[in-house]
Length: 208
Image (cartoon, rainbow, N blue to C red; front, top):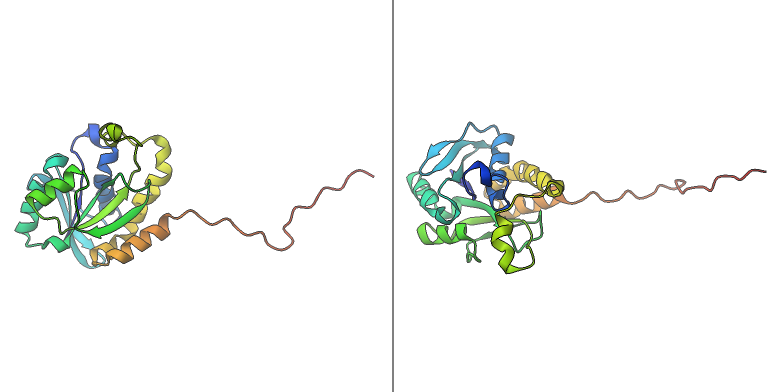
């Protein structure tokens, strides 16, 4: 079994926050792949199902971001899931909006959810870093991540969530690199069509 964790804060007031993109991603995966309703488990909300024949548990910690490890650790240990089979989706300030990178382990880089995982569980998890952009000033970071996505950001956010859900079978199969590549292909803007021969605009004829 693989454990796919979305990081975020519980409660309706945080639901559309940039910090909650991990929750949004897990919800999109659950919808696309027909998971049952989430149920309370180990201070989180969990749903079990299959993605392309792989057994998967989706998890949204309800401990608030800075105590995420208190939910993820007991859940992984109960199901005997190794840290390398735990996949964490989280917001990433150091990536442009809509960009995705996957890595294993590493530092928390100031992210309270990742810091909690390292302290209370493990930092050897697979991390799916979901770019939300940076406000440009470190003093504005706290307010930025805890503010809602702007309506205009749906132009990249909705396609990203769809792409994460569509590419989830690769993630469930352990192909992190293939997953990242697939998401990048699904979210790249369409290439402009090349004009066909004879399509060049012709000047309208003038009056004789």
